[in-house]
Image 1 (spheres, one colour):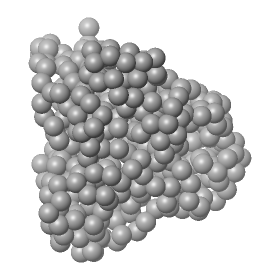
Image 2 (spheres, rainbow, N blue to C red):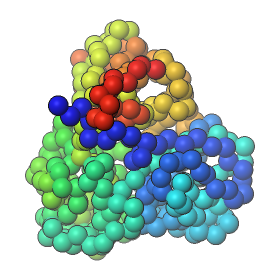
Image 3 (cartoon, rainbow, N blue to C red):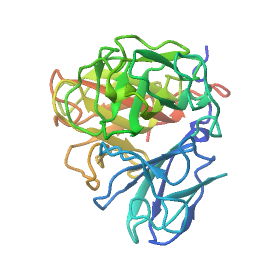
Length: 350
């Protein structure tokens, strides 16, 4: 029995903490050359900055805003200036490098380069950078305004897609989650409840393409889009759901690994997209949240949550992640698989 498909998750995802210097600096010890870097100043009200290898260094999108892509440039006043072999370099832009501020960066490995066009769909992608081992791809395409399909390069069915119009008109982030299906969408930059929408053309993704409707959120004519696509990988990533019990002894949610990063969103009510990681608070209980849909600093007012050797467990009655009978979706990436494939040794709890 294979317990995991990836023995060392740190080769594909890693949280790196650093302190801004308001100048230029290189951030190292990520463990790989990142293809997607998500940066958030922890103690200051600056927006989340998302930069990837496909759009190019210097280009930022903001998970808490519906703004179009912004070009900071790659000079000394830029944001992410380069993606390096063990991290990335920064300019002095306050979104990523404010002086004296503690900052979190979350880093993923896709295909290791900008990639190339994918012709699997009715829309050819401009670039697709895909990692079939870790189940992550970055896709850019140009909308047509007509129902279409787009190749994602994963070789497996996506369980979550996060898409954004990057040039054209300001528009919300649109999220597909496997547990909610293709007739609905979440909005990453808002606290809104999950709602019915034709963004995904009411069509479940396949192992080669995802579908998009004719609406502007995923397919405005001549606008360009970025899509971050994920498939579940045993022992490394999981996109799932659970129901809260409203108890300080919350339900145990099995992932099959010890989570390094976790994002949770209540489905049927207005509530934030809460992010937990294992670096900002390395011991249980974990109660330091950042929120994908706001620029606010880290908060501890939502109660405790334990990251365990094979899943996680809320320890609070707060609606953030454990309201009675409320359904939550989550996205999780591993620190360690529960049992490594090579040694068959179970990991220990924090």
